[in-house]
Amino acid sequence: MPAPALLHVEGLTKHFGGVSALVDYSIDIKPGELIGLIGPNGAGKTTVFNLLSGVLKPSSGRILFNEYDITHLRPDQNAALGIARTFQNIRLFNDLSVAENIKVAFHMHLGAGFWKTLFSTPGFRRSEKVMEQKVEEFLKLLDLRNVKNELARNLPYGVQRRVEIARAMAAAPRLLLLDEPAAGMNANETQELIQIIQDIHRRYDLTIFLVEHDMKVVMAICRRIQVIDRGRTLIVGTPQEIRSHPEVINAYLGKPKGMHHAAY
Image (cartoon, rainbow, N blue to C red; front, top):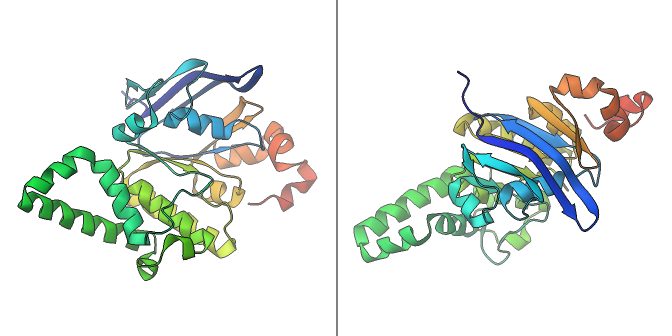
């Protein structure tokens, strides 16, 4: 028997007043998959991520994570179950260093159980040591060791993006939701990001679902891609199937004659 989906979403619909931002949205993501979600502006991509992470509640439909119904859970409850997310608008502590930003994410993830170890000095020391080792691991993985002591506010935009991914990794997720990770990056930074996401995926066998405008990123790293437009799913397929699908070409990539100019 095939393994059950890590994330099973069926019939999600979200209305804002009289406007339908998402209609009958469904997807199954298997453990270890790296899948992309694309579509034009206003297609409903951010709504999908807000529903999956618990920021919004659906008007109808349900979300199962590891076969557990999380449809109406809060973001912190979803995070505790193993769903981590980055945001389009970077949310770092500007007056903390890169290393401190990652440490704070560890503290938030470990929660009350961590603070209990304060009353047991050996336990506290062990926890601190493990955390320091993991911080160094993520600094290396995301090529941040040379800026570990820099304040977040002083970093270039592309580097801040990598710090945010490191913070998400500190939550030890089973599912990583990457919301526009290449936004604001130049060509070199984007190429580095592609390599980093591939490394994270391979090294941790992590399930990754990403929303991205940059087709170079999506086509380079995703095995499966879902396309939505005006709140409805157009197609789920391989990069090759997506490239050649007429509705996708019209809705997202532009007219066929412009295909050579598409950003992949």
